[in-house]
Length: 216
Image 1: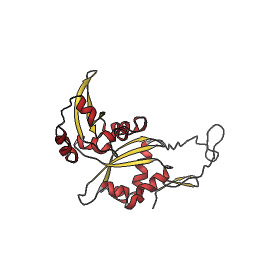
Image 2: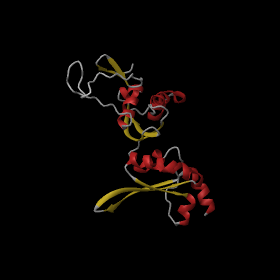
Image 3: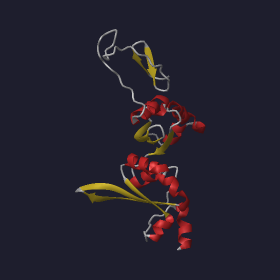
Image 4: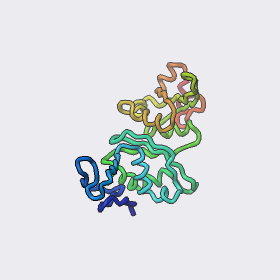
């Protein structure tokens, strides 16, 4: 059952479409109690996505699944990183639901905003790979470098040639959201670009390792 917050004689609920009701004087004060209190509800804040998932997903409500991070381009796309405290519960599956039923409810609430639910991982290279979903990723190298006297978290990423546009996304959206989610500055290259640059790729993804070795 959706949680509701009582505002005057209205129930405003996540997942519902509240009717707009004005009960203010021109000076912004409440006509009934003259308090002058204004409540602002933002549909663009990343916290809204978090609350919608908390409201919809039982495993989040009972603490079995945790939301570890959110990045959002409001109205267009969001990325949500989750982890499970129970090895028998798939955190991504719990949030997506059967045939996408759970996440689609939230997509509808956000008027069609796309949502990528990805698995959080304590290994930053695995986390970055997951965050670049729906693109395939061949190789990730996470490292730090000094910039302006501060240590900056960076990552080099190699993707299949036919996945470069998908990894970067329209106007760089997918890469930008992945960077915000993980906290890493991400430099993405196609496999051909990586070879042309003479990049040494260790720990090649198993799905591509055989092909890469055959072409060498």
